[in-house]
Length: 168
Image (cartoon, rainbow, N blue to C red; front, side, top):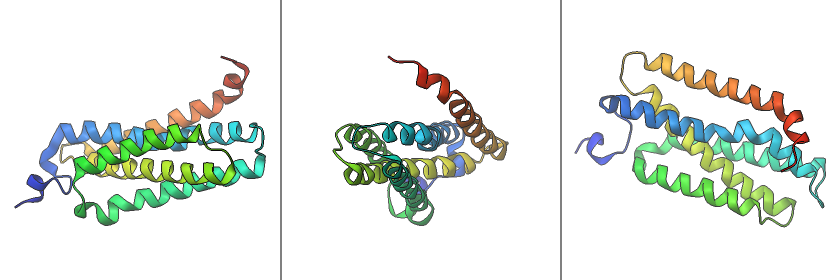
């Protein structure tokens, strides 16, 4: 049975659908890098947290993202792609909701580690789908996706001081 039938790895025949889904997963997975400065800044202002705690929590999320990004590249053929994506998306939602309930620096660091890991898995799958879509210009789409994430991150970082003045 071929991998296309089992869904174990992205196939070039997937075409436009793979590129679109991959781009969406790429964007979802890279959100952790875009919002991390705001997260760390917000944590440092919470009662019971200081700058060192915020840095530790940010580092835990970044480390989780790095490990999560390795999973698709090293072991993706061992997992079914749709189930892996669904599990990672559920983990992103669950860990972000749990972040609101964490009572201290260490529990929040553990939750943010798993949030980063699940976002890293989505990012890795998204990169794989975009780059292997097999369509003409897939390398350009991949470069555009990376560039768009850097531009979005720069816009968010540039506007953080303005956004901090807005109290909702």
